[in-house]
Length: 98
Image 1 (cartoon, rainbow, N blue to C red):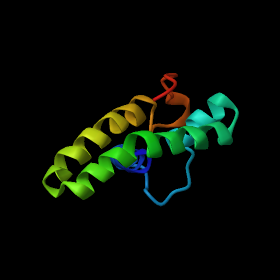
Image 2: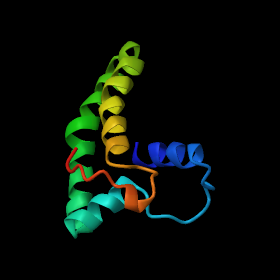
Image 3: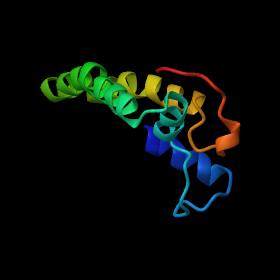
Image 4: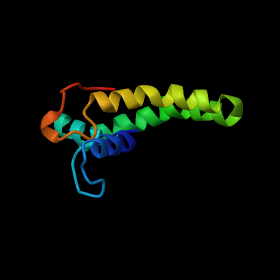
């Protein structure tokens, strides 16, 4: 979601998608927390505790695939948008945590 929301916001603002930048939430939170390791741990926990159960549900119950994807990804999309994904670095809203 971090990469997807960052890309969509950058394209909406007319920023070239291939241009180097530091606008991902991962990078924003790492600067705020002063640690890439802590952010990597957060992202790992999100993947294992939040996303993996939804993925297992979708895998074992294919009819639930689309609702599971929506339920799993919507809160993450909201969080990365709220954190400022894709916006210039000086526009970070200052919200922390998922």
